[in-house]
Each structure stands twice: as C-alpha cells, then as structure tokens.
Length: 360
Image (cartoon, rainbow, N blue to C red; front, top):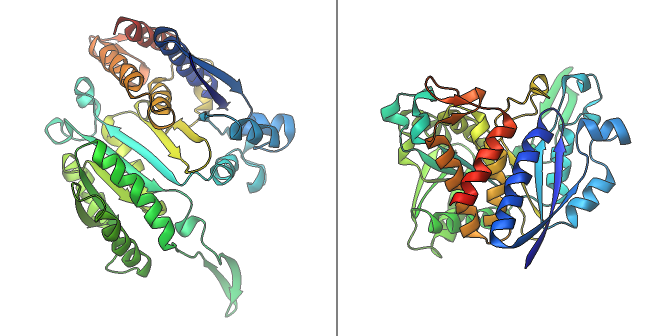
C-alpha cells in the first residue's frame, strides 16, 4: 500500500471547516484505491500566535518540512489587526513560502458549465474558460533589495527593487512549459518588456527555454494588455507565465471569472522541499462555525496534491470528476446558490463529493 504524509495547517476562521472536508475526500480516495494518507495537524496564523506568540512556530515548520505535502486552510482574523506587522497572521504565509522554497504558484481559473451565469462576464465570453496561471513566487519586487523608507532631500522616500536572476526565470519557465505540455501546448508569457529591463531579461530567458519545448506555442504579451484580454477574451489563454507582482494581480483578476472564490484551488511548488496547497480565498472569520462556506476550492487543492506531489493523476482526476458531477447534479453552497438547485452546507457538500468519488 502506498503511504504519504500530509501536514494539515488549518489556520484561522473557516480554515478548519474546509480542510476537514478536503481530508475527508482524501481519506475516501485512499480507501477506494488502497492509499494510506497520514495527516499531521499543526498551527499557523492567528491560532499559532495565541499559543506560541508567533504566527509561524518552529514546531509547525518542522512538521511541514518532514511531510510529503502541506495542505493549508487560511489565516487571518480582524482581532489580530492591532498586532505589529511581524506578528500578524499573514506574515506566516511569507515565512513558510520562504522556508519551503516555494517558487512556483499554480492557479487554475476554471468556469464550470453549470455556473456560467454566476460570472460577472457575459456567458458567451466566459463559457469554456480554463486557464492555468503560473506565477513566480520568491523573487521580483516583493523580495528585491535594497528596499525601505528613508528621508531624502528633506522628505520621505520609499523604494523597492524589482529584480530577477536568470536562473530564477529559467526555473519557473521550465515549470510552465511542462504544464503547457500536459495541457494544450500553448503558453503566454506576460511581462512589461517595453519599459522594464527586468522584463527584457524575462522575455529573453523564456524564449531561450522555449527551444527545449518546440511543441509548445509561445506568445508574449504586455501585462496591461493581458489584464484587458482576460476580461475581453479569456478563452484565448491556456497557460499564462509571469513574475511575482504581475502574477499576483492577474491571478486575482482571473479568479473572478468563475463566479466564486470558493471554487478555485492553488499549488505552490518547490524543487527540493514539500509543496503547499491551499484555496485562494481568505479565512472569512465572520462565517466561522456557520457551516456555509464552500469547501470545493480546498478539496480541489487536495486533488492537486495527488497530481503534483504524488504523481497520482488518475486519483486526481477522480476528485475533479466528483466535483463536476456534484455541481451537475445541482448541489450548491451558499456562495454559488441558484434558483432550482439544492443549497447545502460545508459538511454536506464534502459528503456528496465523497459519495461521487465512490460512485466513479
């Protein structure tokens, strides 16, 4: 029997509710296909601060590093807003990304046929959209140095350094091309090469890497145009590759296409340590304990664990198919409720998806 260790960092707010459902689905997959998943819980975010006075305790890091994959819920709560920046729950995310060397963020944006009416875009524009955005996660302006705020010419002056090493671009480009090879062999690299030296190196390096993937059609697009095209004609994209700050913005823009943040998973990959998987939505502390939050994003994040960390592609597809069948059968959580459909709670949605896994 195959055996895998998954650390579960539920976090704050509704984090535990959605990770509980994802664990339930993974256990169901394990029972069906004779796979042993061992789950090790650990604290992160505000709940970790309450116990350890730090949002990212050493104990949590050790558990994460010793696992085969990390499943994260969400962090944050308004009651921690008065804490110093270095103690805020959100700081734990930057910390664990750095400690696990999570350099590649994969954010699918899929519009399900049953839910096209929920998108803010017209159905004929958004129908059939299936995009994978690959964002470099450890470089760029968020991590560049020097940075700071100081006084120059008798007034405050702030600065951040946008920078990339060629090796960092090569590394993320290989991830993107490999993903493109497994999809429709189309890759759009997004930059601002008409203005930024960093983007000129980015475009040059991606073009160099593309020679190793001759089957993939590579195109380039400036970020401002890409932002417009995501709204005007999202179906033109298959895989989008971009840097940290552009990816942060574009992936959030793309997430709106589906009609709910509760549907969209993500994966953050490393080339040497465990990868981390999480829904893109926040902790929603106002919804905690109400059993109404949508667990699908977290369940699909768990499915991505199977594909990208364990190479269990068939089992990954089993979960995705179960989610699709559940939506097709008319079951909805509150955020995607529709007239004539059955609105269910968090745990009920998890149970139905488990049933669909067993029926597959």
